[in-house]
Amino acid sequence: MTGGVNVGHKERLASVLAGSGLLTFGLLRRSRSGWALAATGATLLYRGLRGQCALYRALGIDRAAAEEGRRGNLGVKVERAVSVEEPAEKVYRFWRDFRNLPLIMANLESVSVQSPTRSHWVAKGPAGTSVEWDAEIINDKPNELIAWHAEGALVEHAGSVHFEPRPDGSTLVRVSLQYDPQGGELAHMITTLFGEDPGPRIEEDLTRLKEAMGRAHEDRDGLQPATVDALGYEPPSPEAETPRWPATRRPGLP
Image 1: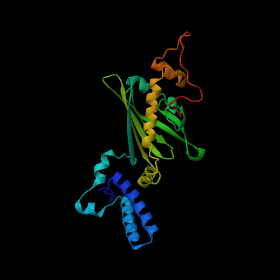
Image 2: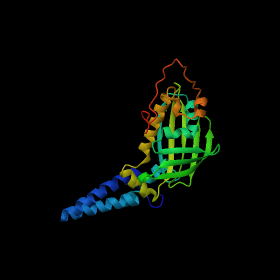
Image 3: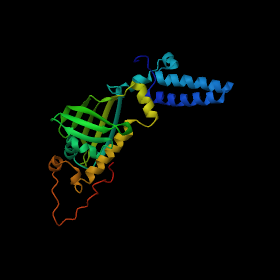
Image 4: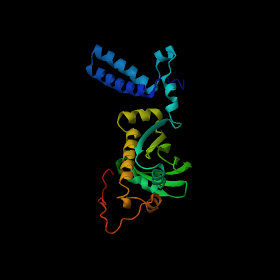
């Protein structure tokens, strides 16, 4: 048991949601049955926020420990994957040129490469603000893995992306993100309830990656010159009619 917590993360989320609803409903009724519902809601809310269950403790059950292997070192871990119909080498080269990532990441404004291992990132923040941080590559295995750690970010985070070749020539791209939200585990639980969990956003970004790689032959202008060269895309012949997306917006991109 870690710090007295013995309730799993999903159970805690369910307890917070159910407890908040029962507490609010019970208080609004202003009756004896309402007070009983409010008391039940308060108990569930406490269980979710604290992650502690007396019954589990009495029975020797520890649901939190069972999830420990899936938790990140920074507190919260999110993993998502997508299959891309391109070889691992091409997908790796696209991702490794970080300047390409704003093409697929909706909230990312720009990435400036400062050295082979360091880069500066600018993302969209709340209320029209910008959030900036520096990232350092801590592990780089060509065509297999890129891992990084962020420095100076509002939310401390680290992550990795694996490029796993498949027998049919496609690539499974698997992204793992670990972060420590301000306010810790409680902040993550609250933001998850209100739809701010990064998991769905990563899924959207990976879908954009799949779409971008699928049309890269026709949409070379969206890629960095170094990436175009690395991927081996040849310029179209003058006679060829190459579809061009409007400069202001490309389908599937923000």
